[in-house]
Length: 232
Image 1 (spheres, helix red, strand yellow):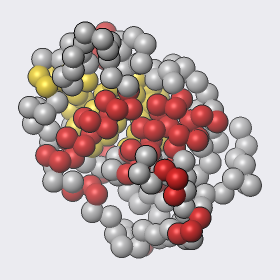
Image 2 (cartoon, one colour; image 1 turned 45 degrees about the vertical axis):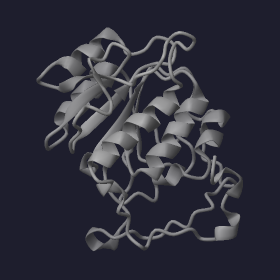
Image 3 (cartoon, rainbow, N blue to C red; image 1 turned 30 degrees about the vertical axis):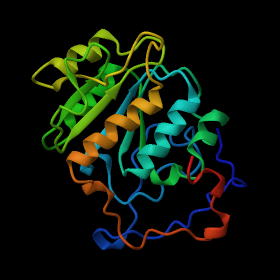
């Protein structure tokens, strides 16, 4: 899909602090298929980030869009593992992400095996953490650390066996984690809510280090900002 030049981001693509004061190109898979401008204003590659979010076969575009917005707000990279339940240029996906797409690094992986190979190639300490109802420790009791990749499954079927296995394998993973809830009337939490709960607990334990953004980050025209969703 060709980028829509009439749908320009309202954010100013300012230069962020970094080597040679340059904005690095965001790492992502199918550049022309992602929402226009995705990752363009991000100054660092995903492997340099404290935390990562991984969605395995997400089915609802609105959920993924909301998660992308949360990742932008918390300076976290987002990985989407195919097959997806929607096209990445879906209008609902774009709308849920609002005008924040330039501030989230998104990469698409063709399969879990492809993602696993990518993960293994990343430098530094790292581990995969599965969030599942089958988790053995609650999200607030788990000790997070730099280089954690938070892995979430499909809204309809959860994590596939191979993903859960890798997350529990000591060579790749750090275990399976659950978010406590009463299951009498509710089968599961909304995916975007689950990501928000887990991500901000992990960020809290890391003293919100990744949120220390440079002062050069700015909005070109504050009045053009979508104010209707500030407190949403």
